Image (cartoon, rainbow, N blue to C red; front, side, top):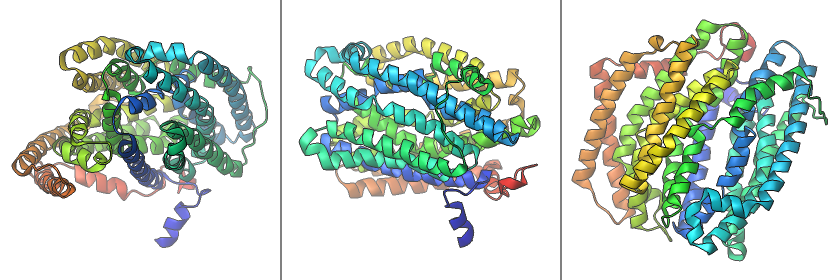
Length: 534
């Protein structure tokens, strides 16, 4: 067992689906722990105010640039093409596509970065209208934006390079590079905050992006035999296929990415609101990363391989099974997130310049975000099903339409419930996107909705509701505030009640969820027709 564990931790080891899922899940958990430390440090050192609002808002323009060039999906779309070339033993063509994609897109992204640096003041004032009322805050946000914009080049190149590693089923390095990026932000703040204030975080982010996503990925990829050479072959068939798959992602806007941009735009008029929403979202990203992103990232290569090998029935069954297990487990966890929101947020963030009132406001948004966990995990897997099938146009048309339709919902919710309405609108939007992706996959006969384990999902939802009610009741009976000890005791009581109700409820309803999770964990690491994937 020890030998197998050490073998799986070698950077060059090729992982099977179960080992990859376990590795990425563990790495995601470690990454979120480091992310806790980052957010905890920022909250402690800077609090939740106009300065932290400016820092978090400064990420908006860099995120736009990354999205315009389909940076977030660069590795996903590239995996489908590169994996097919490897499956067909066409390594030289794979190298040429890799080099062409990098050469062309580095030029494009370089031009966009220069434009972003020049026009940052006008762009920031447009996308964050509330900052216009506070010129000093606007100026600080522009300064931080200009520091952060160049790091998108490192993220983009690193994303494509990581796709090479994932296509070779080498998951360790891509799973660990986000941790290095986060450590760069913390190091920047600790070492440079006295000289540069909150700008130290942006400097650390830039350094972390270079070392983590770019440098370490590139060093690991060089061992696979991949070689980069300047290539501007726009007629290359693989490059053209990549462009065809990526253009919809460049032109479309998914609410999974845009909801934070929209919330920042509305919340920019409220002092500290962007920071409170960000802290809540970052805390929410922990369970989402473990249950949604880790499974999606680990499964993407295997989804693509099944589809390339025309194993369509297995493809559909694997996706339905993954969605059921991840979404059903997410429903149960949502109950805990709702019940334990306040003590969890207070325990994680309060201290230094982050006060009890900040904990209360952040916890409200966190609890609302937590209700949508199952939807976020399901849409992450459904989106990757489309990408594995090399169909990006249809889901992005649907996602863009839903995003555009969501803006009036955000506006109305903000007018009705203030900042809390933005969190509610985010849940409504992701629900619409998840349903749309599921229906489109069913209509295309890729993943039939009728084959989903709906009885099991219904049982999980009923048990989650009972566990949530019991957890809230336990919190109400015990609730104390003002000390870390009280937070820990409150979380422990809620957790015990929640776990007991979940266990009893799953047993009484005859749910197969626990058996399904154990069966999946015990599956051999060799998928059908791929003995070399062990």
